[in-house]
Structures are given as C-alpha cells and as structure tokens.
Image (cartoon, rainbow, N blue to C red):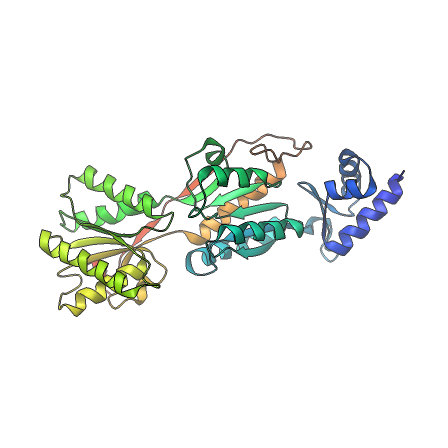
Length: 366
C-alpha cells in the first residue's frame, strides 16, 4: 500500500527526471488505480508542483513559475522541406505562448516509418499529435484502425480523407486547395483566356483537390475544355517528365490553349523552360500559373502562383490540438474522464491566395 505522501514523492521524482509522466504507467508501477494517480496529480497541480495534461503530468520550469508548464506535442510530417517545413515553423512560432514543446518526426512518405515515429513520440510522453499521414500504401480502413489505436488526441494536417466516417470525424486543419485552383482559373479567364489547360503531379493528396477546383471553375465560367496531363515527379525518371511536359505543350499548341495551371512550382518551372527552349514566349504565347509558391519566384520567368498559407496552417493545427487536449478527446476513444466539456470534431480550412508575377501576363509594374 502506497500512502499519498509516498505516491506524491514518487510522482515528483519521475516528473523531474523525465519531464513528463503518464497516469496509466505510474498507476501500474505503484499498483494503484489510475483514478488515484489522477487525483494525486490534481492535488500536486493545485500546490504548484507540476502541471496536469491529458493522460498525465509535466514538469514546471522553476524560473517562470507554475504557468510555464510545457506539454510535449509530437509532429509527424512526410518531409521536412518546403511546404511542411513552413507548417512546422508556424507551430513553432505559436508553441511558447501555448506552453508547448514540439518534437518532430519525418516519415518520408513511408507508413511503417510513420508508425515508428509515433511510437517513439508516445514513449517520450507526447500528450497529443499533429499528423500528416501518408495514404499511398494504406487503405482507408487500415489508416482508420491505426489512428483509432493512438491513445492521445490527434489533429490531421493537410489531409482530406472522407472515405470513412471515423476518419472524417477527426480534427483537421487543411488548405482549401480546390479554392486555390478556382482562383487561378478565374484569374486567367479575366485575362481573356477561354481555355485553361491543366498539368498535375498526381501522386500527392493535393492533386485531387486541384483537379476538382479546375473543373469547377471551367464549368462555372463556361470555358472550353483544355488539355489535361498527369505529371510524374521527375526525380527518378527525368526523361519521362520531359516527355509529359512536351506532350502538355504540344496539346496546348494543337488546341489553341494559351494558358495552363500547373501543379507544382517545380513542374511549372520546367514547363516554362520547355516552352522557352522551343522559342515560345512566356507569357505572350503561353500564360502559366503554378500551384504551391515554394520556389515559384526563382523560375526563369517568375511564376504567378497559388500561395498556400503554410505557417498559418501550422498555427491553426497546434491550437486545435491544444484545445482538444484541454477539453478531452471525445473523438476516437482517447477521452479523459476528467474532461469538463465535450467538443465535437472540428475541420478548419484556410483559403490560399493568388500571387501575381510575370508568367501570367498581369504582373504589376515596378
């Protein structure tokens, strides 16, 4: 039998040593109920000795007092460059004000590595996770089963997975990419183009939304159908991508299409180079709008592009997660019995904007 005082001393030693503890683990070690450990944590929190978070407790930084408790939040993204790096930077900027410490894991678009990263973060004491799960080699059912097994609150970022209710009912922060494509087509239509071609790197979760937005805008504006070409990444087989870009350009010339929306920036930049190599002028002979705005300004002809709100998205995702931790999960079985309020799942969509440069023929004068 462990008396309250001895349990409190043990809790404080573990928190000081590890920075955070989980109620279930401490209860198992001391052979008491988890309800007892949660009660101990509440008492120690009232005394200003530690901070209570979802599923456990965290240390307080003595130099700043009780309000400086830091929850450990895990972030797992497919890559640590460009789009997702900016999203993580947005979380980083907000983290201090929310008393959050971030730990980053990168999956490299491999589901097995993604699951390993999550296990590592949970072992470190993560009280919540922001995930951009890879969908390439998983069925929706497998993804739902895995996410449902994670015992802490989750927020999905830049994912729209509507195949199963259990997935669509998770908290999500994402960009409305369909809206971004609509912006691009509307802009080109205002410049007088009656056909807007499309080139899309299809092996991304963004691609279906770009196609959706392009189709919506073409129908809404009564435009003529333009060429539509699926593009490969190009790193593994540069010759294949060159053929695909040449095909897109040939089809534009054959149909009188003088404007095209291209996802991504890199693919758009390569299309511009292909056009210039043929003696065509951009934007006079072919207007180009890119999608993403990661390196669009550095193209041979600076690219007009759909600019996604990456840093803002990171801030929204982290705020969603902290709110979920504070009020209990209530979504996929990881709820905290101490939660004082049930919150329904929330989906936040941020709208991208159009950044006009030289490649579309409407660049502002210096």
